[in-house]
Image 1 (cartoon, rainbow, N blue to C red):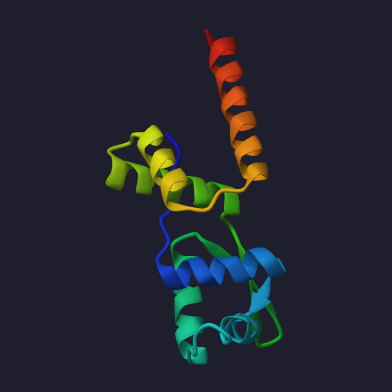
Image 2: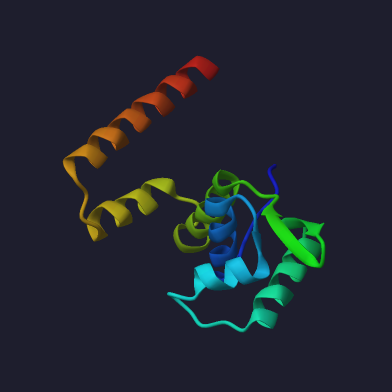
Length: 130
């Protein structure tokens, strides 16, 4: 079973900055988050240190500055968080989750085509596994 990667709101926001930039200093992360939320430099630094202790990020030093990079991949975090959401809200019923999303969101024709293709691919994968 894959490891669960559940991130709190601030952790996820920080990871998104690191995924987009590849690596960043505390000041760069703080600046990237500033349009959405005003955080003290020390708050961002403390959170990055905690995330490093949890194995979510790593740093290298450049003089007196730490430069952080993500250790988790966006795909593994999003998959883990969606699986957790499906489990907690829909008792693991993926069909209920999809029905909820399709009923509650505006879905374009292109998105429906993509969903149909994903379903066909998954059906083929299950058939091949038999």
